[in-house]
Length: 262
Ligand code: HH2
Image 1 (cartoon, rainbow, N blue to C red):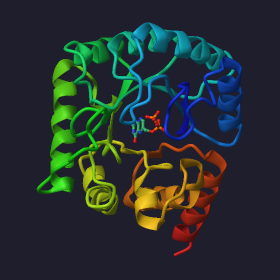
Image 2: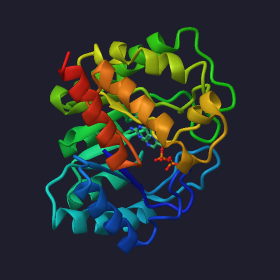
Image 3: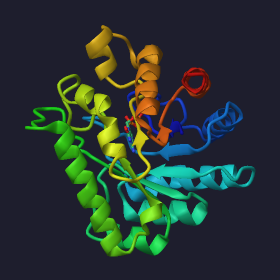
């Protein structure tokens, strides 16, 4: 899954794809490079990011979704916590609602997801984006994330979302200490996979890479991003959400070929 942020302030690609033509060019490039799907966001979730109205999100996302849809059938995911934005983007041709709040942001999120009949990504986050990194606390991070995701999947199904439309995501970096919480999650992804839903892993360019391997700006964390993607592949995740498509795909292909030659 190739990530494109139509934001001025995303931590990894903020400002690069706010221009609609630049975003469309990046979408074409990622699909040509072998991305199976795209994830488009118009509001950064990093701590301190400026909130974005649903109307602005829709203005940024819907024309791009229509333009991609005019030339490709690839699944398009929209990264938003707002039901209005999800509704407008699904109408424009998106197929997946990627919600970092696991459909908890608005009282009608679960119902809107069920009504839209789209796929949903339910992601774990402790706290709220603005403050989530201040003091995340867990007694058992893997168990708590797994229990949360199982409970949100049950809530989605109870609201009418079909089981086969649900993805789960451990939310690397969302209310997690860079090493004390992210590393056990990455080491135990098989326990999230064992819940029986396709798992999406988003570790690309995240801060834990600097915490482990030494400071590096977001666009110089490719090696660490690939290491995390391979850990995900080994655990059986269904998709990895990445900023660097061709390099990740090359690593996954070589890893799979080696695994297949056993
Ligand atoms: N990570 C980010 C945003 N959305 N969605 C899912 N399902 N999983 C993730 O791990 C995830 C996500 C953060 O990365 P990015 O989009 O590059 O940055 P920003 O939130 O600053 O736009």
